[in-house]
Amino acid sequence: MNGVFAGLYLGLLMASIFISAGAMMLFVYVKNPSPAFANVSAKFTPQKMVMAGVLLAYPFWSIAGVIAGLAYWGISESSPGYWLASPNGAYTAVILILGVMLTLPLALLLRRVLPGVIVLSLAFIGLYGWALPYFAE
Image (cartoon, rainbow, N blue to C red):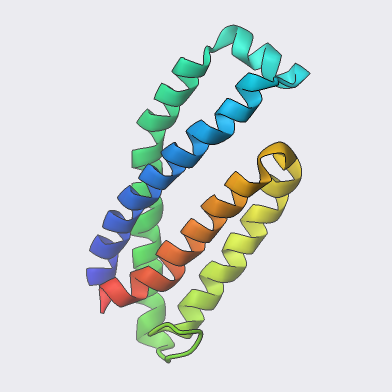
């Protein structure tokens, strides 16, 4: 059950990274808006977008962390094994594949802020894939 608490704490850390990177990514779109972003920013100011991101990021990433912790708890019972530099290589492989699968569509959609998408992806994979098994043990 330590995985659930580790996932919760790492979810809070992921939310902080998401808010920081998201604000920088939003700045790129505010500085030189695309037509689609100009329509959205006419209804919602960038300040409101950042505040909405802050209000939604902590619950979302905390819940994602708890789910990751539960997944680790379930996988660690059935498939333990030290590989991929992790106490549970099967779990780390699942998170790695999930991270890549989630990153590819976002990278195509948000090409202008590709470095930010990559940073968030690496943070997701690093925190939930590698750090969570170490903190849960």
